[in-house]
Length: 441
Image (tube, rainbow, N blue to C red; front, side):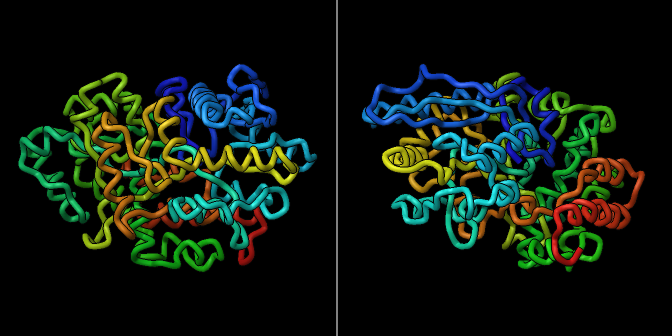
């Protein structure tokens, strides 16, 4: 999933469900006003959303300042399925730009990296790239992509003043989380904000819990891909559905959970009308835009599981930047220079000029700007701790069904029990796995 903020505000957030891979529309275009006048000219293809373009232009500007011998010209493409098709077509016809930005994980694997891309495993900066990110841009032992941007967390955003007033501690287990909820409800505040008026927001108790699943069943992703593990029969994986049901059954949701939408949830959280909101950190900047106090009043913690000692954050990666194997000669040398810049502290600083990051960067030595919202700062310790974070399942397995958000709405609304919801989702993913031709399905 690629999630972008600040493009069309919260309306875009609504469109970017957890199942999506990109969320823009438009047409392929180019701009030559951001490059320099160097002796070597290369093209860089990026998404055409406002923030994508802004970041790409800033990277090019700052790269050219340090590399006046190279001119980088920006091209843009739409997102979503249209953009996927453009990337695949241009790679297959040998017409790809000299450098391009694209998804990681299963969509990266779908563009046949061994056939179409230049490996960068031998580049000196690869040792500084976050291991979680490298897993999502590696094929047959070779690394192909450099990270452009920050991680995004699937976590619980919480209202800090409520915690302070009630003397609560950040929970590391589900039992502690539910105990906090009981105290918050007793104080007359909605413990858990849910916004099923936008169904994609209903999935976080399941998808954001994957770090806990992986900690309990380290081979779950591989077995899941091979149809040897199921949500309904895995004690760890089923927890996400059970937690969704437990919050509903305990009466811990806001009373308008069925109709409330994302902007309602962010308002409740920022204004202290609700205490917890399980959601993606990609929404933080939109919240702060509308409710500036949310920058300091809203914090973050990982989805609590059964074991406090293994509690950690589930993360979604930034896009990768790749070089197609049609880039050769002096253009290849220039393209490698550009990737080295992107994957450097200077590159991170350049991206930070273009917008507030959605989370910590995937490059050692990169630091978050001091003025990022508290909830983004709260992600950093999880990334810094060995074993403190895990990739979301969609980066480890291509198996993902289209109906999870409807199923989690049903479970969270008391329409369907957790066990039934998990079994229904197992059926939901079967068709996609078969379409992908995965062995064992």
